[in-house]
Image (cartoon, rainbow, N blue to C red; front, side, top):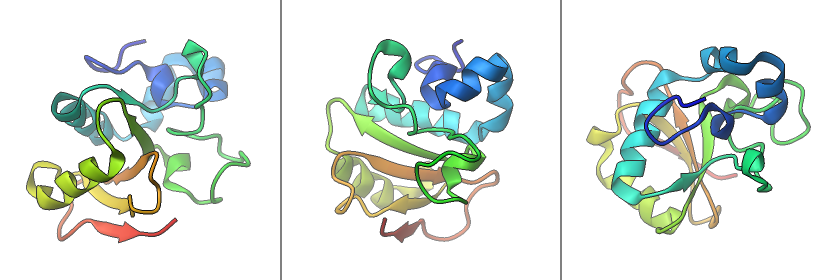
Amino acid sequence: MKVSEHFDLRELVHPDIFNKIGARALDFLNCNAILTLEDLRDNFGPITVNNDHLGGSYKDSGLRMPKGTVGAELSSHRFGTGFDLKFKDHKPEEVYFHILNNQGIYPYISRMENAERTVTWLHVEFCTNKHEGEIIIFNP
């Protein structure tokens, strides 16, 4: 089920969630995340979040199971506001610094993991309203 030009809902939610509630899973995602993911896709090319529906190994990079075993108990992934992004044509650190240097064009990104520590993905978190102040950087 397409949720935007380049993203299918199955890419953004855990397969168990999608298999249980289907399109209703969209109600659990921050809509500003989808808009921002499209902007990042336009600027940096293909992005992988989850790819298990295509035979890949990623299934916990978007919305995670509420009581799943991956990540922190109160991770933003469990609330539909955190996503781990893997870029086909760019290193996560490159995108990370682009976002930090252009925060005004990404007003819904509120937090990111330090990409110097997560070298194979970029973790971004989204807020519902435009973020006031600088993006918060934290270490995994």
